[in-house]
Length: 108
Image (tube, rainbow, N blue to C red; front, side):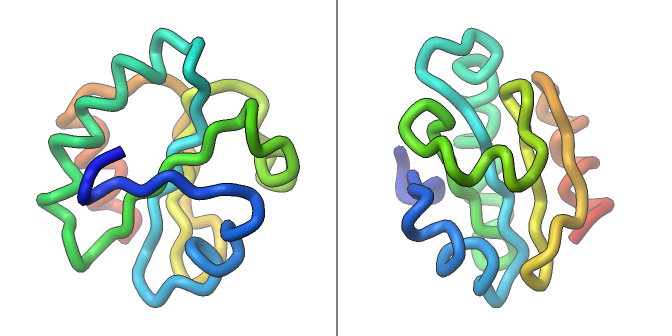
């Protein structure tokens, strides 16, 4: 990961996402997923722009099978924005940078 995007696991999801004092964008992904790989550099590019306003985290669905079903994740990449411990918005599939910014900005 990077200095602005952290990998999380099922074990720390509650603490890192639900209990966060700022909104959290969770990228549900897998190493074998082509669109997930295409989305990664876009997230890396945007994360510094939202530093202190939105926390960016990634959850590998293959290694963390407990969390995705709790939030209806059936396809990847899935981005879920959490605010005040609740799901605020969900986006499934690859987005370009402008659309991803619009998704975040309209939900924080």
